[in-house]
Amino acid sequence: QRQMCIRDRNKHQSLTLPIGALPIPEKLLVPLSQHIGAPANTCVKVGQKVLKGQKIADATGSVSVPMHAPTSGTISAIEDRPIAHSSGMSAPCIEITSDGKDNWIDHEGIADFEHSSPQILTKIIADAGIAGMGGAGFPSAIKLSPGHQRPIDTLIINATECEPYITADDTLMQCQADALVEGALILAYVVGAEQIVIGIEDNKPAAIAGVTKAVHSARADIEVASFPTKYPSGGEKQFIEILTGQQVPSGGIPADIGLVCVNPGTAVAAREAIIEGKPLTHRIVTLTGEALGKPGNVVACIGTPISHLMGDA
Image (cartoon, rainbow, N blue to C red; front, side):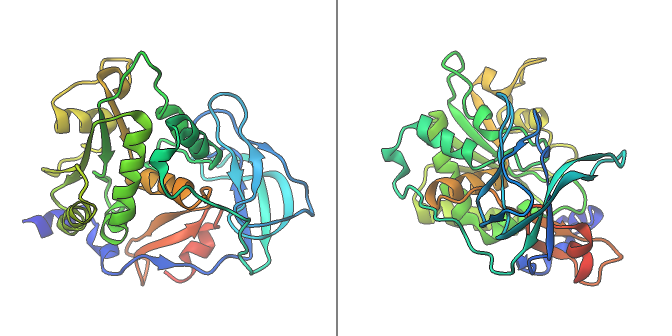
């Protein structure tokens, strides 16, 4: 029955292989607006050479995130280009022509995060350009700073991934469970939460097993909660009610009832920013569908053209 459930949602096609790695494309196109809030403001010039992880656009306003070069190369254009939008609209983008070297900026993380204040860690997450990677794109540092009037008692990892076809989070939990657990512990420390719950639908048995093993290995006080698969349980408010029995007030946010809810990819990105000193330059992408010969999940640089993603699939 569980296998039939997976097949009904067309997730089985992309779950046959581990996470793959794509060659770096010749050109990357980084939109300045890929998050909720104000677009980032370019801080580089055409012709300038950049290193991987170098900031190429500053956050503007209170709700925004900076952008970083996904690889090393040369800024070859700063102009409006068509972006991934249902209207086919154009928006300001930065084009980087890769030098093929993928050379990083100097970076250094914080091995023992508990020796730093939550405020310092939140700033690192903000400076790393992390926005929620579950789809909404809300700047993560703002979500992690609900204010003293909203004390947080529970951090929840929303690992539902209820949308058909998509298996990026499922694969992350199977292949990067240790990083997810460490990321969850970091974010719980940042928001002052005493409890951590990772919620996973029951049609992801391998993910549940992988995360449970990682929790035991880390000797972490984390609950791995499995619940029935039913679309659209991945919506934040629906997910919270399923998992906790509590309802987020109409017009309110989870912090109003003492909760902060983040995506697994966000937790792993926060861990990379803090432990390794790496800004957000890539993410896991699901490539699937009947037209593809090799469906699966790959780690792709932010700004990778769709044609490049589909080239070997």
